[in-house]
Length: 117
Image (cartoon, rainbow, N blue to C red; front, side, top):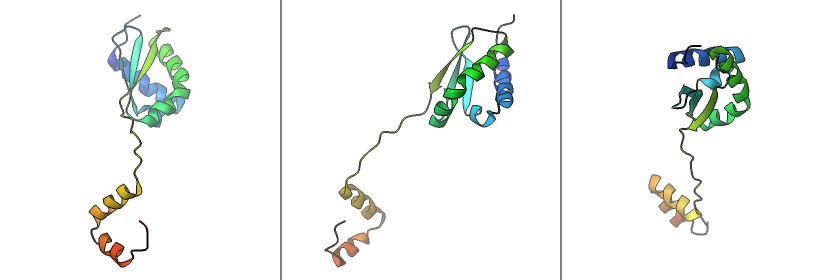
């Protein structure tokens, strides 16, 4: 049994994507050999890939194991994206942001003082 190379892994990844009909999904993940023998790492470029790959992981790994001849091959998904923190803006914050984009909003507020912004 010859050792798995990065070129072989890339070729197997593309073949499995075509066989399983997951080409659109799997092009978002970048597989590479890990430091530990018998393990690959998949860099998730997007949260979409990270979530959509989970239900297909077993099928993908079974196909990769069969193609590589490595029955103990395993994978780890590395999320490369940064999760965004949700920021809650107050109405005053929103008004000030709109005022920066359009200073004439201040004139409107003076014309209609009864409207609460």
